[in-house]
Image (spheres, protein in one colour):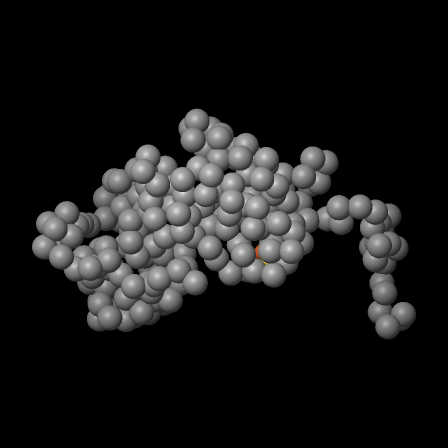
Length: 222
Ligand code: FES
């Protein structure tokens, strides 16, 4: 489990982020998110606004983005919420980075199905590139985090990198994905298994076989 403590609130942090505010582009997105909720319920938009703030910080720093304390306070002010309430949300969800990260946030699932399918080797692949859990690599490209199940167990092992999941990985396939990202390319997300489309059975269908040709009502057979 990665550390979920926010970066220290220092004078340097205030100097860099104290004047943060949404750009016109992000403000439009934030107001659109708020408008999805009834009048007086704007606090319900706290999660999308934190996500937008993190993305704007990411654009300004050429990283995946993170949430310095002054930015969290800005979101709180935008929604008329106590800052502590917004901090509670930011520290609870892994999708929010509380410390600076690299351009690519490599989140390797280490939970049992992924572990049984080879996630240890994926961590070794990352280590071979100089990635250390919880740290930004020297070239600023990578941050490695070990995460719990990401819901892709049927295509384990998997890694989430920024907004994409890469599944059915081997060390060689992960290397290819990382090479492509480092070269500024956009590798295909999803399963990396040749011939596999999404999470359909990797071999022949073994259940619900009557559904192959047409919709079949199984209820009478329960
Ligand atoms: S255990 Fe890795 S995605 Fe579920």
